[in-house]
Image (cartoon, rainbow, N blue to C red; front, side, top):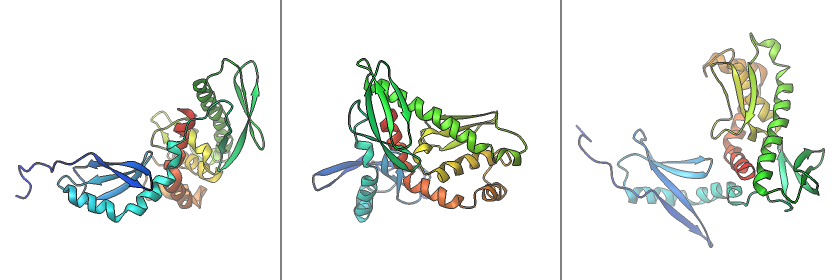
Length: 252
């Protein structure tokens, strides 16, 4: 039979793409179940997935055909290469699809406040950038916890039971989850997306209290509460990698 006893073709683990003095590394990853060459966009930018026996020549030719698309995706993930937030530096912070400037203040202790049109960050002479990252994450988590709990109130009367808890924290790949104890966990990076998008993820997880699957019945429950869910899902597919990248940049 075809393929019995044959070894997979030896392949490099990626290639450099260069253009006008800039360059980036495109990872290559073979996958036993892959049937064709595919370019995927993850949290760290684009990567190439290959079937086990794809030749290096075929892989490079495929990349060459999609060079412009790859550079467009890399530009979209440019914030990955930006420096983390640094005390005293000019900066803007995201908040539900908008960005607001940071106002720095000298104080005796580090604390952060979100106001209508800006962020107030108070630091002391003992504050470090690492402490700033930790404080910023804690601030977003606290604001997010209150926001999601408030939004959940309008949906709870339609559900057979309440979630045991709603938690907000960094998630590596997921936007939200519902565990076996009915605890909902939501990605803190959702606070960077527009409010309707963040609310859609909340609704998605609440509907898992009704249907613990992604069956047509589940999506019917989602649509009954969030008719524009497809638009919000598409937004996360298009902008999600950049949003998660910025969260890693800001929170470490």
